[in-house]
Image (cartoon, rainbow, N blue to C red; front, side, top):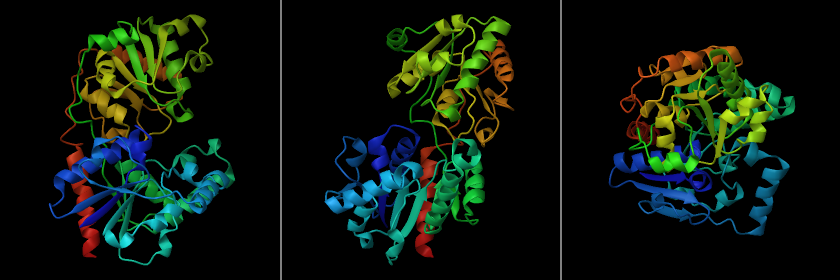
Length: 384
């Protein structure tokens, strides 16, 4: 079996989709047969060890015509940014598809690939392409309509679709009319070797308070920044907790936080760390007393898996399939816009400190299992 796997997401970011692809590729290298060939397709050399153990294919996109069309699709129609694609549509015509039995795309690419008439099976992985459906107030009616129609039409062309949770499977199937049997769940898993850690140099590096509540994300409306800040502020006022709030990730700053704070003294108890290297994360989870994630919407976030394996209790929404993952080790929020409830859950969880232990999630969530299911789907498509 010859498999082509698009990997520019790995090159361009260290966020969820990039981490997912890298670990699925590592898993495929473990489960595939020796005669199988796995080729990683991207557009320029990247300093990542994942390319050392696989066949690397550099797709040329240097000609002016391809660059012009790609720029029009991205800037004129908003396809690449709005649909999350990291693949050059015109450059794809330069790929010799006949050499691949399977081509595994990323996200929802706005592709001209359906003009090609060949036997190559096409698959893709979608993570959470339904936010305009869940949060219509943040998108115009025209944008919602165009996105739904565009994504539905593109997904029709795929032979199989992967996604990261049962909830994600259900809602994507409903919104984009994906037939039963076409979409498969291959969930995220904790990073290999990730677990409780206590590095003094990390604590000193960030000058962390002794007791704190932790949150990490790329700040955006669906992470519910107001719920995080207001819930913490109410807990401070109502229960006189001694904890600080530590916010990590891009977009968090004293300025972005201050707009949600009523009591100006609270700002002194909020720490904003900015970008945090992955090697520091385990210590930040382990030393926190609560991990707070009251998101307005989520797929299957790595941060919850990471927090669980570090033994940090979690407060998160009960929607969006997160119950699939969190059977113990935390509290669910019925309404993430009820800031008083968030404060109550913070107090309840802090009162129960010491009852939570590192959760063994590897039996349910492992990259080898997700990779094996991916490989099995590949094989089933070639038998059709």
